[in-house]
Length: 217
Image (cartoon, rainbow, N blue to C red):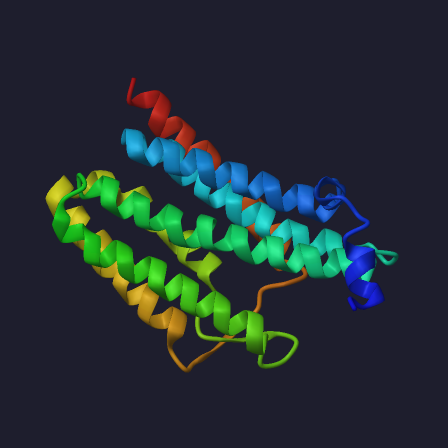
């Protein structure tokens, strides 16, 4: 016999959860990640980076919204946590892997790097889902969203180097970040005022990459 909580969860339609404000924010981040993947495949890297950094913005935003909703039920919290984790594997796993492959012109040499990114993302998110934070403000290893924040900044200097040299640099950086993602080190969880800093960072990078895109025409 199924317990009452299980039965109650099945009385709520799936799309009802999708209408929850934090989950809408999460899905907006998923859309940004999809656009980033699409434009990365097309080789339009400025737009791809814009999509990636906005996916981080919405990933941070959904948690802030969820914490401020005092009457949000445990059922919605549980669903939101699962949705957020599944979207993270797309935004911070698949998306950077596709970006690396595309920048490497889909050479087979870039497949191992892409797999490392995906594997580390899956391992890290699984670990976090089981064990959570070390404390309220500390992660074990570097959080995956930080990879995109760093990558978006480094990509600003892409024009200084040749395509070949930068592709090697990008490859090496992705591997180094992957090592940090699963390393037994303590890293801070950026909350509070850091969201406002991320907002400014996102807007500034959007303008810069938009200018790079416009000047390229």
